[in-house]
Length: 389
Image (cartoon, rainbow, N blue to C red; front, top):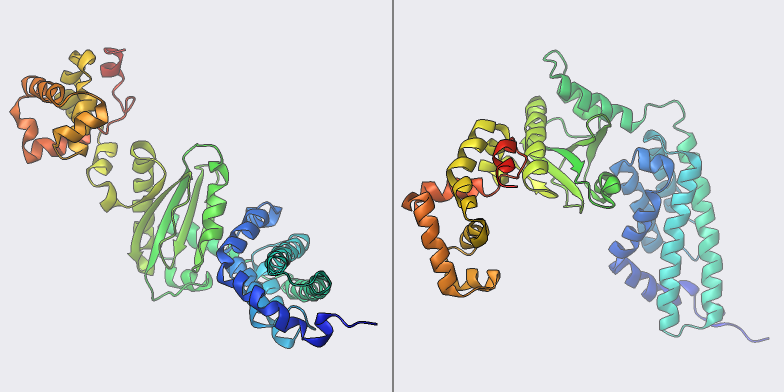
């Protein structure tokens, strides 16, 4: 009876190059797992970054250990730690089992795909699959043991909720540093406060969940369903998530977190109204923040710089002026964008001079024009808009 390659050469040796290749491209695997895990009920409801760190720990054990052999003590420690983190975050047993098996399956399939491309014998790949699934099943058992050991313990989400609630109340008698510590953050450090809302585009209703799972640093999160907000206290700024308006404030020490939260909410309201999805701060919005909060300022700027241009709609002077600012006064580029001759652009700008006066070209005038062109119809401008519809 012939012996397979796995009997002659250790299976781990045969599969190691493909396993390491998967780890080198692990972001792709992690993202695929994340998209599936967020569909699980308790992960979608309370996706703690600590849990995701735990899931990553298991993936690391696949690489640092040997998923084609008997699970080791190190594998057991990683699996139980992940279960404990899941229990503290309120993850259900069934969801934990599904999440671990999803991760193991994605890694296994990717390793076997690469092994097949490298022409590793089918018998070897079949044996590798059998052993990897046996390894994953034992890891699941240990993860569940870790989760059930936390029964009755306060969840991480409850501690996060307590911190965010105290920040919103701005109660001077509350020791915020203690709540920051309870939430698993450094009470002596500086933190970024986040306020995020969907922008209403297709798929944006799950963008907040994606934000929480994508963030790899330590964080305390809480949802405000009434306002549609996701609030967070983070050790570092998050990445941009499509479909989500994310406002940042900080870095703030524990005692300054309520002020930072107020600022993050201000920035979020202005960004949602004036800009849209992306990462925003008070500095990045600049004059747009004041513009959003001051209706009288919006009215004045609109009437001074935009309203006169609407008297000649056939020349589209508003778009011409917007393009002129965008291209820093380079008429050839403005003409190319608008699809007209450069002389047409010059003639339109001459008409702008007549309607607005030469002051629009001065630095102060340019700043006000820039702001006025970013006022959206409906920003307390109903009377003006109605006259040009």
